[in-house]
Image (cartoon, rainbow, N blue to C red):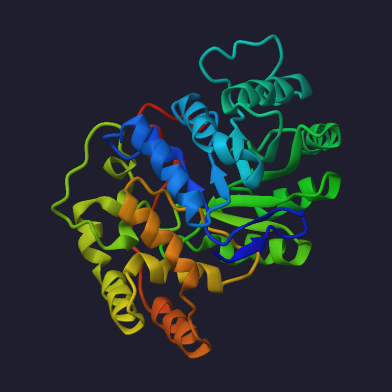
Length: 332
């Protein structure tokens, strides 16, 4: 497995990480705990050294599961988690969630659930417009100096927020949605990360699985499955986005790869500070996605793919407001 540096943070990770959310929430029927633990271990055997979770996943239970899964190799990996800006069930504390006391308490509870005494990468899960971002950055700086956190980051932040936070306490990484279906951060945030020496960590790099090409307009979703509420999986949008899947399948045939692998290889080609974290809940997906790190797009292939993508209109998206309709995540 190839490795990458998350900007200037000093954190070295596998070129592709593992998003652990789906083991507990978000994509319908869950694998047994024993299988989730086996897949986390398998990913590590295949070279994965970057695991991502958050207190809101479940909530709380995914941190516990991930902590248990990585315990045998904890010191060999970069473990990331995120604190929600909003109080979660049981967090009826006497201080605001984003106060210094609230952030410290969130971290302390995450450390207990993860079974560790430090977090390598600690993100603010979303950045409310009215929050004291400089104060939050200062608090994270103190936690870093104490050794409880090695690096910190923001999720779904704007360029202005990235620059404000980084000026107080240097950011290790920004984690935001990025894929062939969601490219809004290419305009400003990703270039700012490159300029400032900040890693960029795409979540949902396969567009919630759409780019795997395994779903059709006939696929049905139910229960706690984000594909039930995000618009790119509506029947009409699945059909309308067929040209993108046709493009991926053509490139996949030419490279003896899968559409998912081409999607991940494209992300890796966008910058050596970019590290995607796809979710993987089956052994074949773990092997397929991690193997994408070995697929290199030539300059000519990358240019051709970029040109083709520029001519494709994407239908539908994935928003926090839509996901809130599941009743398991608060967006505002």
